[in-house]
Image (spheres, rainbow, N blue to C red):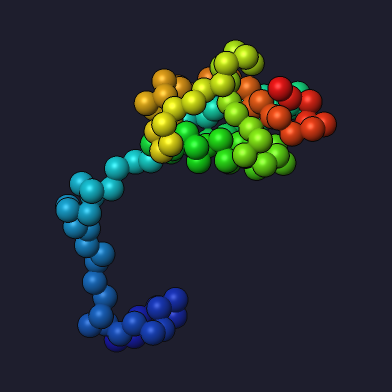
Length: 115
């Protein structure tokens, strides 16, 4: 007998229920993101959703790009005075940052309004 028109390419013998592998279910951990707020030199605030495992230097590059500034001229601070300077590649979670933290993007770029 014929199948409904919604499946014209499938014959009766080809219908199978999808199967899930328990191995694939165990290896797929949910991605947990944290939101970090970044105050730009112009006074705006960026809200960036990032993984805690993201490297600090990659986060600085992302924040600077979002603010339209070269990352080489930027640094991040918790208090607008002292720049954070972890080792390259250090994950955000190991820097001590947590979701909701406010960081300040400092810039030595002329006319940026920063440092």
